[in-house]
Image (tube, rainbow, N blue to C red; front, side):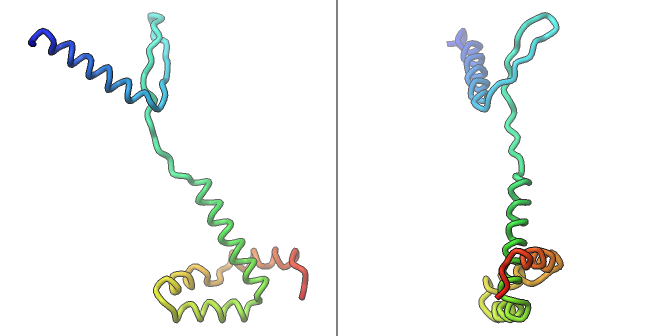
Length: 115
């Protein structure tokens, strides 16, 4: 049994390294010409482009509602949300008019047909 301990350790190390290579490998050539495969490290990245797209679409949606309903009706609806449940109050805080909403509404007003 003692003779198998180094082999078992080596086998576990190989299996562990093979499992790490499930993300892919990076092959490099050393100075002596040997090709060495190392596991590619998994680095989860924050989806910044997706977050920016969601924010942009949110501001466009707010601008569309502001342009479509008009300022008085939009502010009235946001005020009615402020007197509601906790989720409605959070929605009112998100939907309150801001400078970006005004800019988006001005751009959308040019596209929307006048009533």
